[in-house]
Every structure is written in structure tokens, then in C-alpha cells.
Image (cartoon, rainbow, N blue to C red):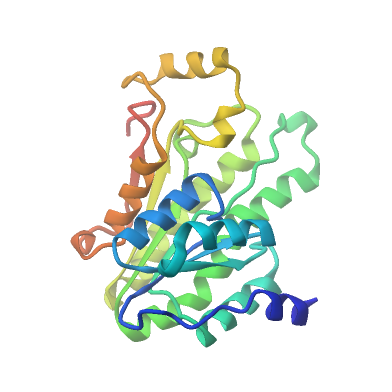
Length: 258
């Protein structure tokens, strides 16, 4: 399986060597794809990950010469290792890491199965740790790095039926602050972006009544756009954000103010 995966999804050499490489996990659609496109516009060579060949093809088509897709099962340590090896042999190890990959398995706690809890923590929180740890070495050697972790408004306000997801996102914010302290002396910043109710293909599946009810709770009176999250991430990845670390930036239209 590992050999087939490596041969099928080996990464090509970076087209523009002077560009910094950015890695965006979960980049085949929605917020992740929007972030990948925005970072490419900012001049990064972007590698976006997906869990299938179809997702990789979608990323390749969207990025063109500015980047490429790569296979990653974030909950699988072996898959993470193979991706890092492919990066090192191809475009180079990233100095910008955007941890966007995540899943949901919603249920009330009384009904939640062990695997529904564990799979969300494995993908959203342990997976983030698993991909971040080995990539720190390259950033420390370069004495420059940007790590941006995607949290959620529910990390602060909670959400019934999502205790597993909320716990993972709250954990991400704690991880962000602690890691920021560990690596600040090497000029590596670590921040989180916490989106609110964003207009994606996932929210498009909701009924108009559900969407209207949510909008009524948002002071700005509208859902957010993917580009608004992508711009926040791009700012934190830039030189202009060099004095910001350990922060969680809310992008939620006022749905929750902290």
C-alpha cells in the first residue's frame, strides 16, 4: 500500500525554487481550497492535501503551476511520514503550515459511540500534532515559520451535539498557545483562525430555514465567505504578521465575541 501510494502521488519538483512552500491540509474544497488559492496568489508554492485521487485532481486543476495536490490521511502516521518524504524529495519542506483538515461525527453524548469520539479527536487534534511535529525542524533550521491552525467559533461558545468536535477545536486553541511559547525564539509564529458560519458546500446542504435562523444570531446579519477566512490566514502567514503569535483570530461576524 505504501509503495503504491508513493508512486501514484509522488510530488513533482518545485517550479519556482525561490518561492516558500506552503502546505494546506484538507484543501480539496471549501475553506481549505480557498486558503490554498489565496496563498498561491500571495506568491507561495502551495501543496494542498486530499484524501482521494479525485480531490488531488481538483487541487491540481485549481492551482495550476502555482502548486499541486498530495495524498494525506491525517489520522494515519504512515501517511504523514510518506507525505513529508515526498515533500522533501519534491518541492521542499514547507515553511508555512495551515492545519485545516478535520471531520465531524455529530451526536449527543448519551448516544455517542466510542469511535465517533475517537475518530474526531484522532483526525482533528492528534492529526494536527502528527503533521506539525516533524515539520518544525525545517522551520527551526530556517529560523522562520508560520503555523496557522483552523479552529472554530464553537471552541469558545460550544454546540450541542458536537462535544467531540468542540473538544477537538478547543484543544487546537490550547495547542496553538503552548506551541507558540515553545518556538517563538526561532522566529516561528503559531496562531489560530476561528471561523463562524461560512458559506460552503457543507452549509449549502442546510435548509433555508436553518440558514435563516443562523443568520438571525449573527450581528452582521450574513454568513461569511470563504475568501474572508483565506485572507485572514494569508495575513497570518505573511511577514506583516511577524509580531503576532499565540493568538486566535475570530472571523465570525460577531456570533461570539471574546
